[in-house]
Length: 107
Image (cartoon, rainbow, N blue to C red; front, side, top):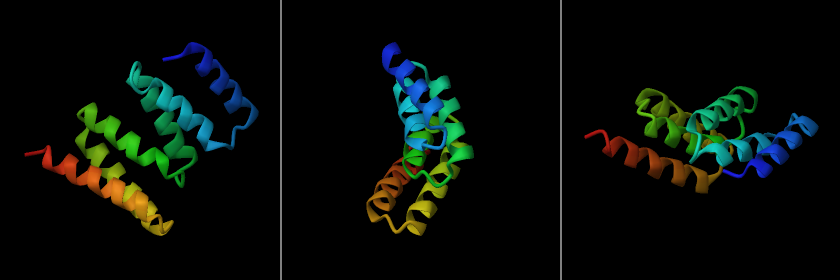
């Protein structure tokens, strides 16, 4: 985690509150070292920017890691549905593959 980068991203969020990438970048910055903070920003993205597709893959993976399997499954399903509605085949493939792996881990 880079505190200088976090401060920069926070300033970007203040300057451009309607830009989801800045919130996404902040969530990703926290992902490895402070998963609760990452979760906070992923939830913000899901609430404020539900059509921002990159959120779903990483948010679902985080919830799986936090052993919240129902939330992870829901986010994978929502992400796949959103990718289909956006006709984004690469995202459909990536999310579907991650979801299958997630489901297989349940055995």
